[in-house]
Length: 264
Image 1 (cartoon, rainbow, N blue to C red):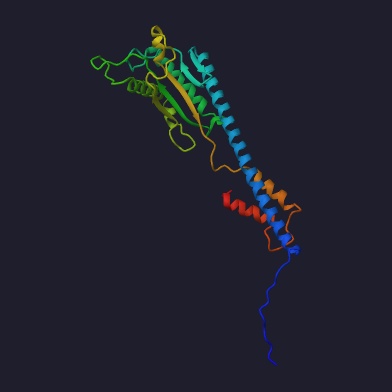
Image 2: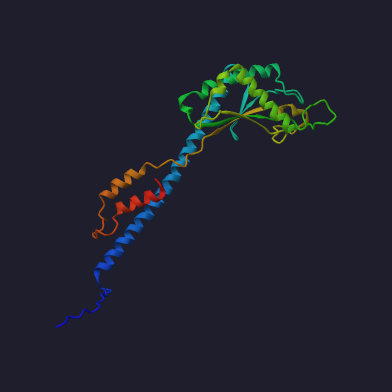
């Protein structure tokens, strides 16, 4: 007698409980991934906003400290608390001039020494990205046939910023050694020409020939990792949602996959 083999197909009824166990495990795992992903982005956002807020507080503090020290030495400086810019409170240059006046030279000398003393403090370490020395001019147009050798107020303002920086580091050479978190030189210069006047009154135009000091803080790093990940791992290791089906991913395994996808 020859036994014949017949193809057998196995069909699972909708009432088969194993189907629903697998689907419920899958949905639970997907829900955990969604919650963890959402939590990650929320806490990451909160962490970065806290970082920015802390850096803003540091910037305000260092500018206020510089102002107080300059005033204690007898130099008048202004602090624009809307823009958070330190402003030297006197006309530093003659019209179309790039050489600092005598009072300006003394002010720059003191400013360089004060700034160096502040920037080397531990509380500001790796927080400051750049210190801009900004040059500004009045609105007097530069005539091509005039005595001014600069073609535009833009070039004139840039040269004023450069000369101010040179004056500062000549009195305090250690300023040139300061670097930011990326090992780049801390100080830089910029020129704005006549575009940012302090006073639009023509008789007070000398006030616009000035130098401002602006501090830019480091942005939050995109590589920073929230510290809550380890806490989530510990919490999940004790959870009661682990799958009874050994072939299904447990929440811990799903978390590991999530970490891999986000390179946490």
